Length: 445
Image (cartoon, rainbow, N blue to C red):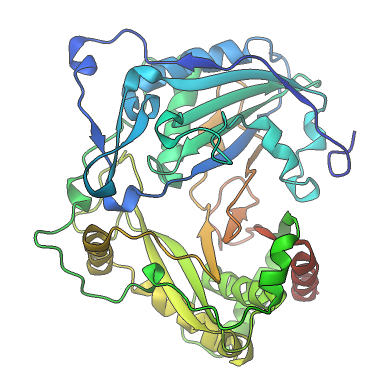
C-alpha cells in the first residue's frame, strides 16, 4: 500500500479514561490550576512517534504505555483535568479525576510506508491520532480531554504513538519533557528525571499592568480588497505538504544573505524566504498589509528565567508587518533584517509588556493575512524510548492554516546546525500550493 495515493485504514478500539491512580489526600485536595496569560492558546497539537520493533514485538505496547501514562499523571496532574472558564474569560484546569484518554488501534500498513513523511499526505497520518471530537467543535471546550494517547499497531510489528495535547498546558519544551518522563516510566524507571514545576509566578502580570511596546500581533489587519487569490481560494480544499531542504541549499541561502547583512540566523533566512514565497503564492493585493508572527522560546530570556521542568508556555511572539509590495519587491536582505530585528526585540521587557497587554484587553492574537513560524528545534528523538529503542519518526500531523513549522531532519538537532537538513511543513489552498511548490523548487536549484 502506498499511503501517498491510497487510504490509510486504522481500526480503533474503544477509548478509555485514564485518571491518576489512587492518590494521597494532598493530591486529592489540589486546587484549581490557573493558566498564565501566555498559556491562552486554545488549540490542540497533534503529533506522532513511530517505533520499529526488532525482537520485542508490539503485543504489550498498548498496556505498557497506558500503565505508564497512569503513573505519569501523578506528576503531570493538570493533564488529567478539563478546562474551565473563570473571571473575565481566563482559563484554569480542574476535575483531575476525569483523566486523560487512551485508545488502542491497528493499521493496515508497515512502518516503511510512513517513515518518509515528506512523501506521505500529512492529513492521512491524522488517523494515528484520536481527537475525541475536539476538532470541528463537536465537543464543548469544558468536556475536552487535555491529553489523548493512541497506540496503533502496524503489520510489521512496529507501532505508532499518536498524541493530542492541549497547547494551553504545554509548548514544545513541556511536551518533550512530558514524553521523556512518560518513556522513563514505561521503561520501568522508579522516578522521572525532570520533576514538573507548576509555579506561574514569573509570568504573572504586573500590578498595575504596563504596556511598554506596540503589540501588532493583537492588531486587526484591514482587508484592502475582496478580490484576491487568498479569498477566492477559500472555496478550495487545503493541502498540507512537507518540503525537505538539504543543507547545501540552506547554506547557500544564508551565504547569499550574509553578503548584505552583518548578522542573521539560518532560521531568520528561511522564515523570510517562506514568508515571501507564501505571500506570493496567496497573491495578496500590493497594498495589503501582511503579518509575520514568530514563536520565540523565552524561558531563559525572562528575568528571573523559568525554572527547569516548567509546565506551560514559555513563548514570546515576535511580530512584523509590512505591505505585500514591500515584502515582495524590497531586497531580500532587508526582509531578513525586519525579521531579525523583531525576533531580537523579544526579551524580558517585551514579553512582560505582552503579558500586561493581554491582562488589560483580553484579546486574542489577530491572524488575518498572517503567517506563524515556529521551529521544532528542541525535539529529541532520544527522549522517546518507551522500551522499544528511540523513535524512528516524530512529526506533526496537522497544523493551523496560518502556521509553518520548521522540522529538523537529523534526530532533533537545532535548526541551523552544521549538516542539519530541514523540512518545511506548510498548508495552503491547492492552487496556491502549486505556486509555493515551484518557488521551493527554484530555491533548491
